[in-house]
Image 1 (cartoon, rainbow over the protein chains, first blue to last red):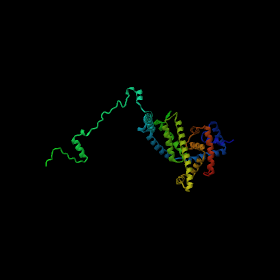
Image 2 (image 1 turned 90 degrees about the vertical axis):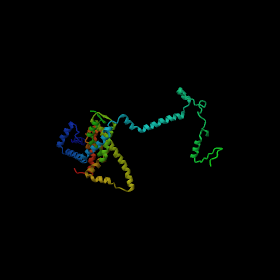
Image 3 (image 1 turned 90 degrees about the horizontal axis):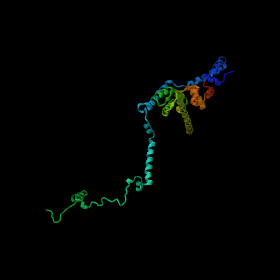
Image 4 (image 1 turned 120 degrees about the vertical axis):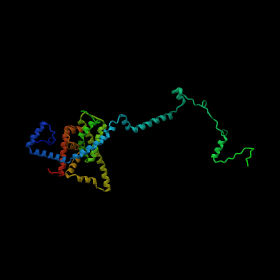
Length: 176
Length: 177
């Protein structure tokens, strides 16, 4: 009885286990039909192998790719990126978002709940500030009147504004 | 020996032993050397960034092959989808020429073109087994590990793929026995 195709296929791949392998070889030795089939399968393999790539091309690409990877991952300054640097790099965008979120909550808390003196006194009694109309008064209510300026100041001010001021003193006649 | 993917020496060793296999596998799925190179690079970057530990060199190799073949498959799926859309546009525009493909085909010999056509026409599960075995030069055990199937299943797929390939290639009269 001849060997089935599947077995022959394993045989030419060198994958047939021992008792079967010697049996197959024995059979092939005196069965020209199976020898021909075997030959055909080997021929198919050879044909598939015609489509193989140039080893020198592989080597060139191998070297250039490795140089690239080495530079990217194993060069001195990027050898060990370090825990913090790496995490920071990876989460820059989300960190900004988180910071903005915290800020919104913080400001929003004040906007919603306000901060009354009563609340503050509950939290920190010593720091209570009673800012009512009774204990707040203006330190200075007076404006500086015209009396507060000397004649020279008034004159120079008017002069800078472009006025031509003529001053005379009562009872005195200008010399002819 | 344990492999840590971020360790410089381990990385180098795994890279040296796997690069050629990964490139061959990717190339025979996408059939474009530059894209294959990018996919392999992407696989190694993932390998490093995942910061994984593997019990042995072989486990690291299987992991890498799995990633690379998935990247390659995703690539051809995307291209297929996009070229389907392109085809529609082209039909509407009435412009059938694709100079790039034509040039690429000129560069390849008749046999290689037939082989590629036959391999590409295989269903995905059979195609991968052929690529991993013939071009990745993996044995049944490794193929099983990579694809997550049993050795017996690999054996069956190899056999089925061979039958289909013989039919396609013989049917096209691409080669004479």
